[in-house]
Amino acid sequence: MNESDDRPKAPWTVDWAQAPVGWNWVAQDGDGRWYWYRTRPEPGFAGRVWRSHSRNQHPAGQGEPNPDWFASLAPRPPR
Image (cartoon, one colour):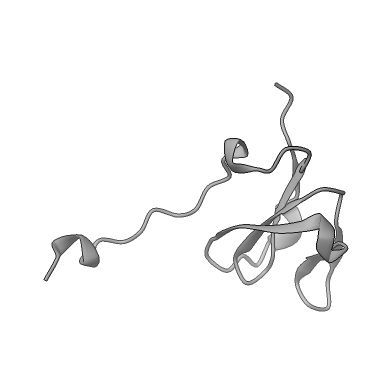
């Protein structure tokens, strides 16, 4: 058995170097999934998700479920 299998994984964190060029927003849904957005998304409170046209949304990472998901929206920081 590999001992590293028993270690907890580090939580996913936003790394803007991984964001596609021109995708200037990031947000986490209530289930813990993070997405990059090309345009500013709108909260969809009924589903605990951020809403944007599918062409403007790209998977970024997986975190823990977040009851405060609606506070996760962040713009790309200035360079």
